[in-house]
Each structure stands twice: as C-alpha cells, then as structure tokens.
Amino acid sequence: MYNNIILLGSTGSIGRQTLDVCKMHGINVVALSANSRTRILEEQIKEFHPKYICITDMDAATAFEGKAAAYGCVLYKGKEGLVKLATLDTDAVVLNAIVGIAGLEATLNSIKSGKDVALANKESLVTGGKLVTDAVKKYGVKLLPVDSEHSAIFQCLQDKDSAKSLKKIILTASGGPFYGYTKEQLETVTKAQALKHPNWSMGAKITIDSATLMNKGLELIEAVWLFGLKAEDIKIVVHRQSIVHSAVQFADNSVIAQMGVPDMRIPIQYALTYPDRLESPAEELDFWNMSALTFGEADTDTFLCLKAATEAINKGGLYPCAVNGANERAVELFLKDKIKFTDIGRAVYKTVSAFDLPSDYTVEDVYKTDKMAREFVDSYFADEA
Ligand code: NAD
Ligand code: MG
Image (cartoon, rainbow, N blue to C red; front, side, top):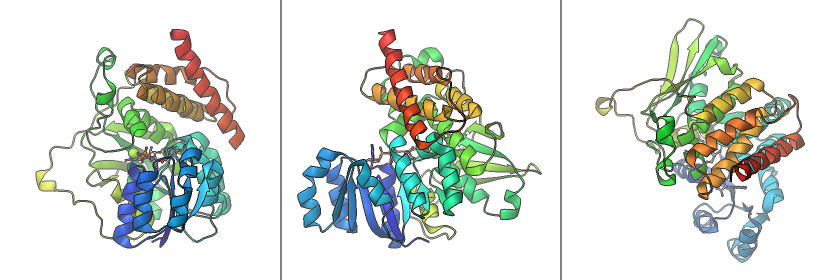
C-alpha cells in the first residue's frame, strides 16, 4: 500500500473518489492539482492539507495566490507547474486523473522521476502508448490501471504462472445510453440524453465517450499497451449491468472474471493498496437481488467511434493519437452545441484515413499529430457548413 499520494485532477469525478479512499485509509495527500475549479480545490485543501498544489489555468492560479499562501501551500501554475508537481522529490505514488491528452506529459514525467503511476488518464496510453510503456521499462516503475476494466483484467492476472498462458481478454462495455439505437435514431439524440449514463457517474468527456462507444475504443487501445495482446485478441462484449468489469481467457479456454458493484472506488483503491485488499467505501455486490447478467455484441456499423479506434490501433503508430485528438475536439464541439451527436463518429472515423502517419514517434510527434487531428475536425465541419 502507498502511504503518500500526488493526486492530479483532484477536482474531477475520479479525483474526488480517490480522496474518499485516501480518507478511509489515512493515505497522506502530498499534492493536489486542478485545472480551474478552485472552489472544490479549496474544500479539499481544508480537509487534506496538501503541502503542494497546482492550478493549470493561469487566471485561476493567479486569483488563488493569496489563498494558497494563507493555507500554507506551495502553489505551482500552468503546464510547467503540473510537471513540477508530478516530479516532486518525495516518495509518493502519482494518481493521474486528468482528462484528455493534457495528462500525457505528467504521466511521462512522473515515470521519469522514478514514481509508480496509478493511471486513470487512459488518453496517456492511447496517444503515447509506446513512449509510456518504454519509460516504465527504462525507469523500472509500476503502471497500475485505475480504469475499471483494466483493473479487472489486472486483478484476474495476479497468478503469474497462468498470466503466461493468457489467450484473450473479454473487455466488457455497458453499451451506454443509446444501446440498440439505429443510425436513424441516433441522428436526433440530444446532449442531455448523451450526458446521462445508465450505470456510472463520470466527467462530461468520458460520459460522451461512453455514449459514442469511443470510450471502449480508447480502452481497447489502453488494453493493448497494458497487457501486450493484439487488438484482435481483445473481445468487446456488451454487458448492460456493469457487474462483470472484464475477464481473461487462458490457453485452456477457462475464463476468469472480476465482478463488483459499479463503483470506481474499488479499482482506485486496488491501485493504491496493491497487492493488498482492504475494506472499501463501496457497497457489497448483492447476488440475491441482482437481475440477470446479459452479454452481447457491440454495433460498430452504427457506433463509428469504436470502428475508428479499432482501425487506428491496427494501423498502429500515431493513428490512435490522431483519432483521440479528433475525438477530443469533436466532443468539445458537441458539448458547445456546435455539432450533432452523430457528427462525432463521422469526423473521428474520417480521421483514420486522413493522414499518413509513421509507426515510430517522439513526444513532439504526438503533440503535432494531436494538433493536426483537431484542425482536421475543424476544417471538416467548416467545409460542411
Ligand atoms: P473530470 O472531467 O470529472 O475531471 C477531470 C480533471 O482533470 C479535473 O480535476 C480537471 O481540473 C482536470 N483537468 C481538466 N483539464 C485539464 C488540463 N488541461 N490540464 C490539467 N488538468 C485538467 O474527468 P473524470 O471523469 O474524473 O475522468 C478523468 C480521467 O479518468 C479520464 O481520462 C477518464 O477517461 C478516466 N476515467 C474516468 C472514469 C470515471 O468514472 N469518471 C472511469 C474510468 C476512467
Ligand atoms: Mg472504463
């Protein structure tokens, strides 16, 4: 179990649930980062007394200077401040709960400073999977999955001998609020409907990603990097109840699954207490009152984001980074009411074949590709208008 934590993205859904776990187990909160929501950050400072904080939005950071001093916190600002926070010279795990590619630099730098990283920020692996996994090897640190599916797979692979005979991964997907919808039905769905996830309460971006199935596409890519299987050996299975969080299949076709209530504090805690299991703030699974567990296939013809992500990981190199950048931009436009729900999938899918991208890359190439993909989405909608 880790006794000290640097928590990046503490004001978000994962950040706040991580603090529940820290509170329950007395994990010392060394540092917290937020983008702009300083009101929530202030409440967290009062309760957890971090020595260091970072606010990435420069205006919000400047406005908070007086308060930071009054609370006795060292305040770092902006993107550079975030790297300083992630690389503090202290013995702590970094839990990265930032949303989007904005989390990549912190992940890479935490690893380079020799820290284990508990990763909720799946976009780090999607955009820079090779860079992140190479750094993990080079600096000999642990990369602990926080995403519920990847935590489930990780938990199922704890028997090191059987892990050698891993044959397939069964990556479960809730299917989101629009499961079973036809292309025509999807054309008219609203933002409010898309923001209403049936089983999980999450930040806005991942909630939209769950509705488009981009989230499962990102998780497929995340699983390829974490567990070293080819995308074709990772089967996406729609499981509406979100009780089976994922499963592994071995050489003998025996399948082991991990189950639990849909509560992110279970995987968050497992990353922080690994390999120990402690009491959890989450509820028990109630087998007696559970409805049937169902399993089915995902509709990649309708949900183009999943198709795009699958094609991108098969093409390899920077293609996953490109579809991620396109998706981040398209979701931003959708949340600002500039485009329709189905436009997200259309634009993201177009991105897969829009560029010729190399298989090997540096971190600079990642940011260049991300920018190109965002600009591609903007011009795609400008041409349509
Ligand atoms: P959220 O939107 O609720 O929170 C995001 C956090 O990131 C906030 O603290 C915000 O201040 C910070 N942030 C936003 N933009 C930033 C920037 N440019 N620079 C630095 N910090 C920035 O998101 P969330 O739902 O907590 O998700 C966080 C990450 O965890 C995402 O990658 C998501 O895919 C992943 N994840 C979330 C869940 C969930 O249940 N919420 C489950 C699995 C994985
Ligand atoms: Mg997940």
